[in-house]
Image 1: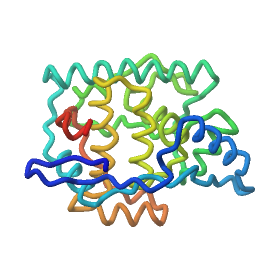
Image 2: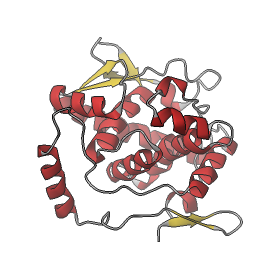
Image 3: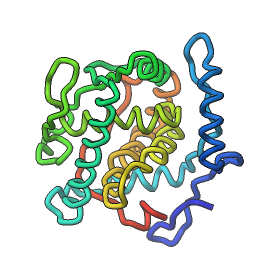
Length: 250
């Protein structure tokens, strides 16, 4: 069973439903069939049952992010984020070569994003210029040479959020739910090296589990996602830090 042990040696499982473990060929075949069965309203069916999130796991990761120190100059953190940024930008360049465009805006739900990517090769993203107050030294805040449809240079965080929606959420057809965030992380980390995955975990699982399971607003956030009211979501403070390897790779 997938999972990890916390500092008290308590095991926290990540429950995998039967049918999730398919061979790569089987999964690709299933994906092709499901895409062809896209319903008229352009809503996408899940390709398979996604891993469910154990609330104890979610809370533990949320607490871990809450206690994570912003340490951009820590040698291990600096190394992980440098490699993560380089690999993220390379993924963005490959997508742009295929005609993908990045545009400032936002989506009402995941289905709208799926349709836009599929039909228009376009991805809307919410600029994060105001998300790093007090942590402007965060490596994700730096400007890149990747440009949006306005010809403006994008920050690393904006580039990553855009390609994560494509290489994570879109490729696995995972919606913006706790289960969807977990599955999109599992899908996207296939494209990253081990060093980069350390930063990827913080930027996806760390922040995502905080949104969905933090003690103060996790319940409210889950309800807001359920009813599609994303404007009511509370987000965590941006931090450059990494979790212990036993949490990330167990």
